[in-house]
Each structure stands twice: as C-alpha cells, then as structure tokens.
Amino acid sequence: MKDLRAWYTYIEEIARKATSSDASPAQAAQSRVFRIPPADELLAADTTTPGPVRRHPLPIVPSSDTNAPRRPGRRPLTETREEIILRLLDPEMTLHEAAALLNLSKATVRRYTTIGKLHCSRTAGGQRRFRLSDLLTFLEAGSGRRLRPKSKAEVAF
Image (cartoon, rainbow, N blue to C red; front, side, top):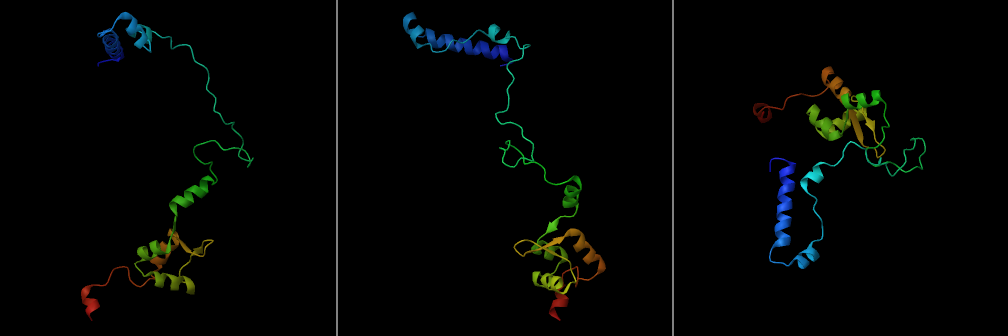
C-alpha cells in the first residue's frame, strides 16, 4: 500500500467481495453492519475547521491547596534549581558505596565516622549517608589506608 487512498480502496474491495459472495441482495443488506465510505469521501473531509476543544477533566489548582486533586503525570517540583544541581553534582552515597569507593571495609568506614575522621549524615532510620565531596576530600587528604589492593607477595609475608 503506497498511500492512504490505496489502503481505503483495498478495504472497499474487500467489503464488496464479502457482501456479494453467494448471497442474495436481501441477505447482503442484512449482513452489512457498517457502511464503509468511499476513499474520496474519507480523504476529502474538511480538516480546516477545528473540532471541539477538549478540556482536561481535572481543574488546574495552585499547589498551595493541599486538599485539591492532583493532575495525573509528574509530581510538582519541590526542590529549587540550586538544590537539584547540588543533588546531581554531589550525590549522597550509602555505606556500602562509600566503602567500595574508598577501598575499605564497611567496618572501617563505620569506625572512621565514629571517631570523626570521616564526615557522614544520618537518615531518619539511623543509616549513614556520605556526600561524594566528603569522600573525595578524605581521599585527597590521604587519610585512608591504601587505595590499591594488596598484591599476592604482600599478603604472603
């Protein structure tokens, strides 16, 4: 099918064959449920006049009213531009991620936070969270044990 007109012509032919195959005109009229308009009629429809304007079913309400129904879709932004940039450039990391980044065990990272060698914040549940900038500062200061894993020769002796 090269274009829409050929498609509609094809559909018209199939409809004609279905209604004219081995049936009397009375049976064909009864079996025909839908009238398929000719291709010229479908393609010549006036598309310049706009149809009715579709309104969204829920009203748009300012975000200050907390009892108002929410519009579907994305949540409204609760962060400022600066907070979004800070969150993306300096993300919070879990204890597991911090230990992997520092190449230390989780117990050592906990110990460093307890003695104040490494800064962390706590969640409402008491879990440690580390800022990437704090971890990078810790690495640059050289406060960690070693940044490379031990070689086999060092482990043997």
